[in-house]
Amino acid sequence: MAQTENERRFDAASQERRPIVEVHHAGRRIGLYRVQGIGWRAMVLGHGGISFPVGTELVIDDFQRLAIDSRKRLPARVVGNDVRGIAVTW
Image (tube, rainbow, N blue to C red; front, side, top):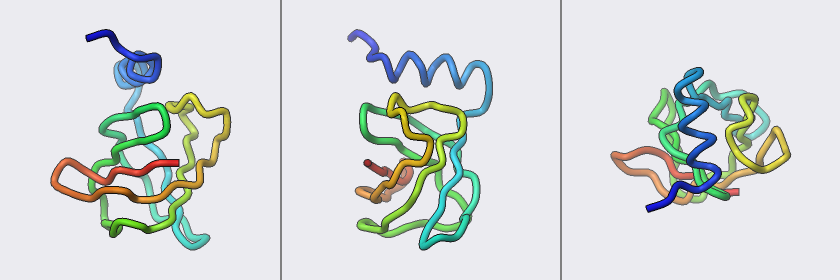
């Protein structure tokens, strides 16, 4: 199966540096979360100090420019939270 552009960028970023994003909730900085995977308009984050229920509104500060979206701060919503990680979409 061919890799998408985002998958290629994620693979390249993970080889160069640790892929992480800064997570904000309700106007407060929550912390840094490791990126487990990335898609066109979605991202899977590793579990951190705080786990968010499905439907939680977050802001993802993509300071490493992992996503193709041109915005640095991505308004996101939690769409899944299980043993694989926290899935967010924007």
